[in-house]
Amino acid sequence: MPYPQAVLDIAARINNWGRWGEDDQIGTLNFLTDEVVKEAAQCIRTGKRISLAYPLHKDGLQTGVIPGRVNPLKTMVSLNHGMMGDPDMFHTSDAVVTVGLTQGQNWDLEELAADCAADGQYDFFLEASPQPFVGGLGSPVNPVAIK
Image 1 (cartoon, rainbow, N blue to C red):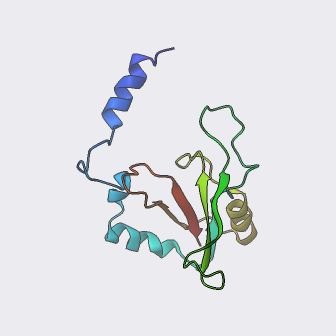
Image 2 (image 1 turned 90 degrees about the vertical axis):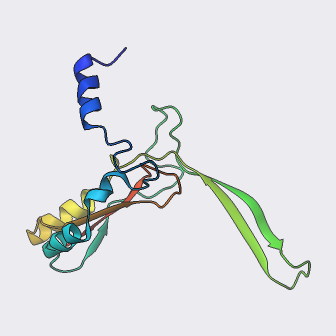
Image 3 (image 1 turned 60 degrees about the vertical axis):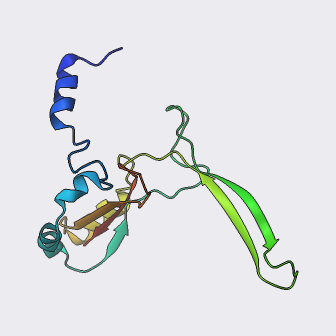
């Protein structure tokens, strides 16, 4: 089913793709200048940090409803590999992780809500920088609330 024209018109009007140039890696985070962050930091009262990220594990949020979004799959590609040829020397193990990531709609707000209710303070500094994936415009964020 195609999108209604009104939705397409709004999407075209608010689209930020390419707004900060072809090589931009952070998108709308360009709005968060040093001055904006300094002003927002005035909300911090205790310095307590609360992660809003859901843990990544094989029994995670993805249920298979959206094709291609999978819970993390860890594949060991090297296990106790001797690097120098001498069995008594340095060894290493490596894994590859495959994960279907969303951008920010799956934040875990329960701990933050409970903490806000407990102390009656609902002001906090939200830091949600994208993961530094080269070429990853729109990379998933790692959100943290700081009270």
